[in-house]
Length: 333
Image (cartoon, rainbow, N blue to C red; front, side, top):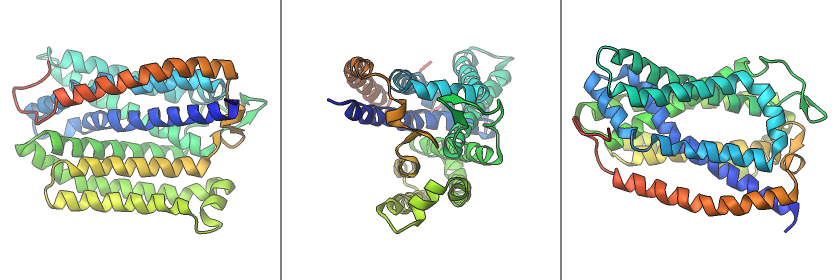
């Protein structure tokens, strides 16, 4: 097997890990983003109980993808981390606050409001920081000889702020459709009520980003507009998923809004990949430029191919065990 083939395999594995993390941790980040707006404290208990059994397992994909990226494409880390030190720190800080709030809020009494804000604030900061990272990837990095040469705040631009807000709205949409599927009564009706406005916000932001992106990079503009190619199927599928969310909410379906929202994220993600392929560190370095040595990639790949089936198996088992509705007075803790 040549290094070229291994690089492609690793690109697929890491890409799969990223979308698994976005989908699986996205809805519980979305629940946290919506937390301050819940109708009552009892509803907040139900919201947190709906994600408490699975949230920590969901973050396995973040660790798995991050470790795989370091081993398979070390050049990405040598450029990405100096470019995004502050943004990555904010994301990790948000995830830490959110994780602590999961454990302490259930035991707190007089200080519960503080843990409410820790859970909501940590979720919001982490989601926004992830959106900023996506925006920075789209804009590209200033590099020379494999080293980041830009400034400490290059990641903070109007475009990256917009992508951060877009991911906030997207995660909130995932969270609301998750609550439609997992709850009932007043909380479910509230989730139905906010889903369509959140969908509208996501479509507006994604629309602005789609119009803005071709002006950032000539290669992206050429790829999308030089001719009518097959990649236009991704925006079409995204709009189809959006219509399905609208239709299923109007018809009061319970599971379909969440499934369609996941579809919306997947098609958007694939559209982003084909826009930048094969650049792993745009605009200069492809995934083959960033790849580590053949032996290193092969050694890590063997280990990861053993680990991933176990991760998929226990994830599926966890969701099966905790399937069904979450009701007041019931929960994992």
